[in-house]
Image (cartoon, rainbow, N blue to C red; front, side, top):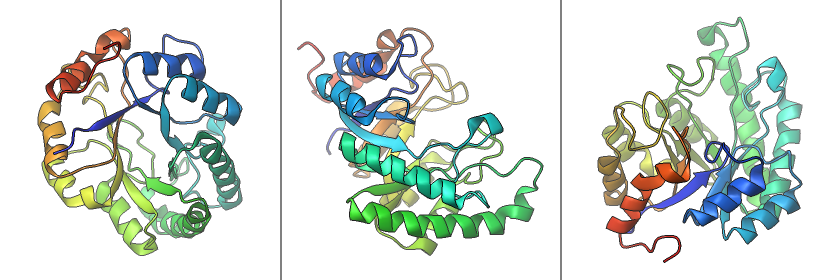
Length: 271
């Protein structure tokens, strides 16, 4: 069984450092070989690519732009009336992915509109999402890129997010039927069953402790040594993104990862 590969989500990790280049350097110095960033669009793509290269990192995941965050938007893929903006954002994401050598783009579904009943708009939003995903799959295929769908927990993380279970995401992927669209898995309930059921669809995994979204070894509900072993046993080959909220200094909070690397015989940073 191959050891898992971890990527530093520098949108979450190293918040004590200003700016993306500094966070990428810190991730490289901490022993990471890969990184992901939600929205790199505040920096020119060449600057991000240079910072990653100098840090010895591969960029493995970015998101499509969120839309107008001041108006509460968090992705546009399933939002009625925002199809043109989604496609414009997709083009920007592809431009960055090309410059960064980044193979995966999370195609953000977005939120149920304010004041709307989820059940009442579900069918319309799914229709919009399917239309946008078919378009995105074609665009991404031309660049040999993979698009990811991420269900986001509506109980804790984002109560309005449209895509909120792996079952919903898997059904949408089946309807679209494009091989370069995959599932981005977060840790939800019934983890053992969900991992075994959905892992064939999964192109990326992200981890954080529940419910506080801290380090994997912080107090919480999830047993990460068990989950990491399960992912290995099930033959997962993708990256595991560290998308958590550090409880203190990020580097000091990486003992859980150093322990994993040591157990799996991986050289540590500086060795």
